[in-house]
Image (cartoon, rainbow, N blue to C red):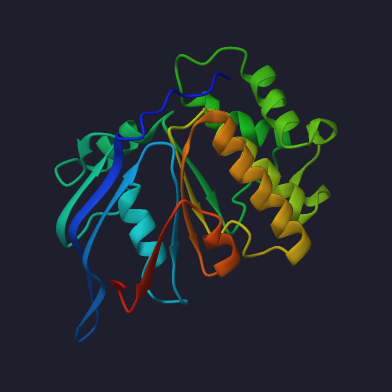
Length: 230
């Protein structure tokens, strides 16, 4: 896995005047209002805020997992607004990685099989099992390749999720509360590993967290209150 070549002036994700509104039974709810930000290649970016502030919604919009109600979004040079779900998925394939608070591992697959899922959707991939084993080795789990998620601790499962997200050498890693389900000691180890992997690979990291210490480790910090950047 070769490190990516990054250009510090290259914008990999951008939001301009983005809003997100959802329709309730008898009213509408403004989740995000007039959000504008730029994320440049190779940076580590934190989006922080209290629960319900809209930070996870913003992450999903930046990653093209959802569409805004207003404003425009670009991801890796492509305007997302005019792309349908399949086109957005094609844009992300092999270029974007995800880590979530819940590990999202398939319980009936081993660690190496869970990691391999990220490679099997990329037609150009070769030596899938070997690449998956190498990814697990990078996160310190070379001895756990054949274990099921139920046979691993929470910290180990999140390491598998990290390996799965990084095995494609993504240009951007989106992480949504990646240490939220872990104890303090384990969360610090996972955070160290995540920052190290992104640095080694040259990947941009976009991190959603309510943890101020974790946010402070990032190059750039954005804070959301009641759906607005402050």
